[in-house]
Image (tube, rainbow, N blue to C red; front, side, top):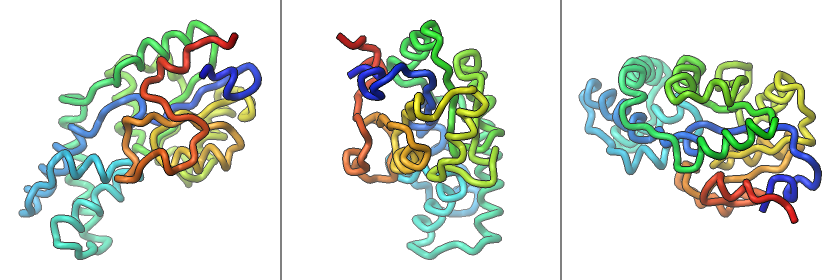
Length: 229
């Protein structure tokens, strides 16, 4: 299905989640989480588990790792703060070692860029990581607007980051589509009054993405390039 047919009108803007939608970042997130746990004298979690925890921002990722490593015991605020600082240091050092763009991402973004569609990245990832990743993977020219998890006072599933991206892109939310991989993306898009497409390959906290009520599920962004007949 084309985006035009999904929206029922000409598409002016596209908003993209980052982790699990454009970028498979779980290998490096897992590496940083495991290094954090080991530094704290705890057992590493492994990439398979970390993939189930990604999607609600770094603090919840760290909290989930600590709960796992401490046999279900919830960490205190101070312990989480300290662990998060360790995680940030390790992630900054390794965040481009094994992460990669998903197949079809660059070709699809290039296509929409040539078509004159305004595009932005809307992620719960802190800006200190979002901006270097967009630069490293050479996405900045395609996604000139980036709203990160700490850009505003709220983050997804609140619709405000999506609406702010539309404001900066100067596009009507009603002519915009959100493309993500999780319940947060669906809820944020619903609140912003725009359709939402979800990829099947991403991170949704261990829940089936098919259960979240997206308007369309896809295996690749390339599926959205088909023109209407």
